[in-house]
Every structure is written in structure tokens, then in C-alpha cells.
Length: 276
Image 1 (cartoon, rainbow, N blue to C red):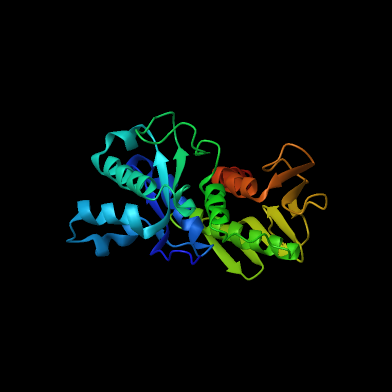
Image 2 (image 1 turned 90 degrees about the vertical axis):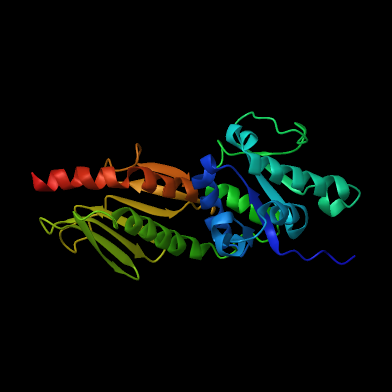
């Protein structure tokens, strides 16, 4: 039997209070070539349309799955109620079609009940999943996530991701500048011209040097693949930066979250040390 062709792989239905989380999920799905109906990306297309009718057709016909981000706010907004009703109509109308039996994919932010969405329906808990993790799960549901066999590519990919995070965190700060190459990124204090952080890729190792003022090898910590589990990263620590123990194992997502949460604090602490 030929599969139905859809305009979108998934349609997101959510309340504005959860937009930041949802947008991160959408950005993650772009890496997997997943087409998403997300209102901000479709503002031009929506302009001038009868939104009540358009959204009804969209949520009942135009997507393979509807990812429903359920929250207290979701249950209170007239547009999200309308979207959920349209999605449920698809489930009801095509109940005997196996392809539509899992059409609504609930993601819960709290214990809010949505009329028609049974508590026995399998769901994902947004409080236990990062947007990146949820994006990966949605891609798996669509058979668009492929586990990499080439483990040697994991460290270079992580290096690129961490470089991007450093740039994003520094772009609005006038006190720091950075120099970036294919296999290194250096963060410099603009006032003192001191190097605060040097991160570099050396074969299959990411080397971090805080306060590195010379080209001598003086690492603060290293990130390498964990040989016992190639889906995780081992941190080998020579300092008190980031990690509590000489060796710790993390998932790739945990490493990136650590950078998002603590990088600026560490740069400021190191800057204070060098300034003294």
C-alpha cells in the first residue's frame, strides 16, 4: 500500500509560554531534514488567510504527525484548543487506518488533561528531555535519525558544536573577542589582551586550556570518546574547571549543556585570576 504524502512531517501545536523550548526542538529537527509546521516560520504564508479554516485543514490533513505540547496554558488558549480538536478529528475519522492511530504525539509539561487525549496514550515528558533529545526522538519516529557508525567523526562534530556555543555566548559581550580556525578557537580579554580560553581539536581529542598565554601544551582538561561506550564522552580533568573528578563520563548532550550553563561563569572567574 502506497504511503500518503504530506506537506509536513510534523505539525507543532503549542502555547506561547512554551515557545522557547519548542523552537529549540524545531531547530534540532532541521539537522535531520524533518519538515515542520511552526507558526513563526510560516508567518508570510499565514498572512491574510482565514486562520480558523487553514489551521483546521492543516492539523487534520497536512502533516504525518501532530506533536502536541500540552501544558496548563495549552488548555486555556482558544487557538490551541481549536488545533487539538482538528488533530483529534483526524484520529477519529481515520481510526481504522493504522497509519493514523499514532497521529497525535503528546509532549507533557505538566499534568494538564486535554479532552479527548486519553491518559493511556504514550507521551514524552518535556521536564525530563532536553529539546535536542526530543528532536532526536521525533526524528527516530520518522525513521530519519541514523546512528553514526563512524565514531571517529563524533569528536570533530562535538568540537564544531562547542565552538558554535562559545561564539553564541560571546557575540553580545564587548569584553571578550575570539579568534576561530578550523581546529581551534581562542577567547581573549579585550582590555588586557590575555588569552582566557583556548579550545583546540587534536586528532580525536578536544583540548581545553584556560588562561593559556603561550603555545606550550598545558591542558586544563580533555574530552575524548569513552572506549567502553562510543556514544559517550570521557572528560579527563587536570584542574577544577567544570568537573569534580579526575575522570567523568557524560553524554554529548550533557557536555553541551554544561557549556551553555557554566561557560561564561568560568571565563569571568579565569579573567579575575589573570587580572590579579
